[in-house]
Length: 326
Ligand code: DP6
Image (cartoon, rainbow, N blue to C red):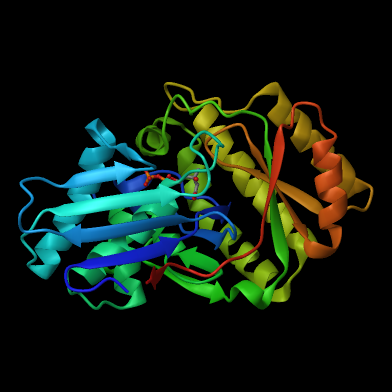
């Protein structure tokens, strides 16, 4: 175990079943609507933070390379929050490594900021509740708030900063839901999520999407509680399509889908119509997250793998939240 002024933590990315898109406050990342996700097993980021009084500036290494520019500034800003809270004045050395390569279309900001938060808080001597850690992670990346608690997780909007944190709805073992991520592109996205959140309000559809969000949130929460896959499929697909409708109608317009994305959406609907319980959701990119229960996993992976544009299928089960590691 790290000691003194250093600590290491591990976190998983998550897939949103009810999406967060747009902030009521961009600086505090107060989400415009509540969201629900589950943590993804097998994919993880491990981050070590060591506060070193001899350092003149924070030193940040991500996946073996020295971070520079906006990526480094975002980490420094996050460390500054934690320094302000703990009174720790020293600069830090941060080494972060994800086991999923950049460019697989899986956002690493959630696992990166969740693991950074847990490691930096521990290294600075803070001993905080899960709610508080989730709030701090949210300041680094909205979806990172959801990678702190275990399993199936809800992030409420909260009236203000202190109330906007995520909590676990159910343990990872509650439901054997699977996310089969069908990769159709490894290109980095041209417009990142932070910029996308800022554009959300330029779409005339965002208001309607946000107004209806608590209904979708509640339907999804119930479907998880009752392990009702068909109810889940309906609300997850509707929620995803509402987010992409906002993206497409923002100014400038964000069209993340490729022809292969649309093809898979049609295929999944077709499978479901013919009795194979599968559903789709798509984040800010072209790759499709195909959800199913463990009993259908083999069939779903086999069918996805037969689609010519699909270059890889990554299978993830619900996973625990962020933890400190030796
Ligand atoms: C489409 O959490 O990646 O994945 O706060 O700017 O880091 P930042 O945004 P981010 O946004 C997530 C967008 C989404 C939907 C979701 O995960 O809820």
